[in-house]
Image (cartoon, rainbow, N blue to C red; front, side, top):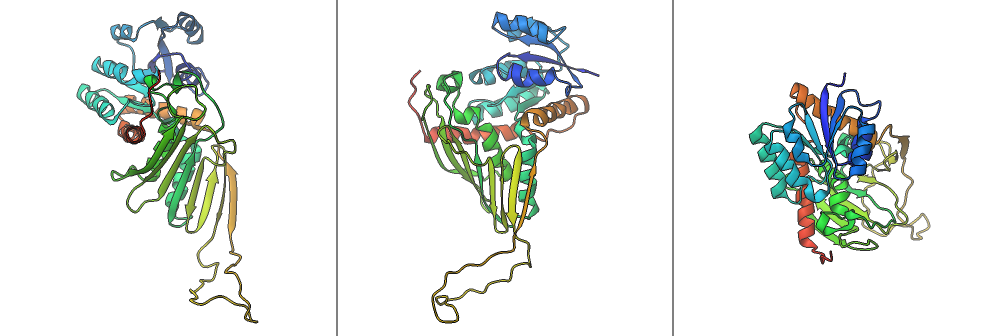
Length: 356
């Protein structure tokens, strides 16, 4: 029974092709789109066909006249997320805002404060936290199977050019605002969202983009007693290897978003080697290299689902459970605020010239 009524603001790639695609799919058991807001007249007309029974508007403020909306999806341009989300909250509406949540930590925390004061729900669409590959990697990391994890690499790389609004600083765009909430979120997740996590190195730059926002980003994040997390979002990597790579004292795991491999040792299967202070030599006294063949185990497998199907469905079910049953979020706006805090710091450390 579709008992949760939804309004969507925006029918672009996110509003239509991610949120809309889910809401029109067979996986949607609970949500009915009753309103669509879109500036473009052609898209408004299409929305009437794609969401039967909905009402279309050209301005989100027209939603304030309705009292039948359970929550609003804010899928506007990134630079409009904060202002529109705050206006919706102040008018008593529950909001699911697309990532990035806002421009900086102040704006994020302001939205959280306003939502608490108005007694409404604020969620941020960080559906990748429900992606099977990330959940598997995080549980593996915590299991001890790979031993003491020293470093985790997270790479969202490709060789690709962009020339749309997602290349412009004036639109609050670029790699780390657009793509960054996913890998940076994973990085903080592996660190347990430790309050002491900090950016130890960062560099952003423009490479082959048409705009003035970065399409090259390298960020190293860590916390006391935690692994070093190496995050990359690079547009000039023609040989991208893995999405996540975990290196521990007992083994290594690597995965894409769809499959994984790992090699590891098991305690007791390899004889402990005492340290030798002198040069190694064979029985004839000839020098030899320090080498051995470890007894290692190998595993591989595929993940069932992605951030765009299982992740999106899980995110929506989490919101419905909160609206209907008061169930606490597992992916909170406070987590999203910490992610933006990292992005804010990286931009502050690497100012780029504004050209547009």
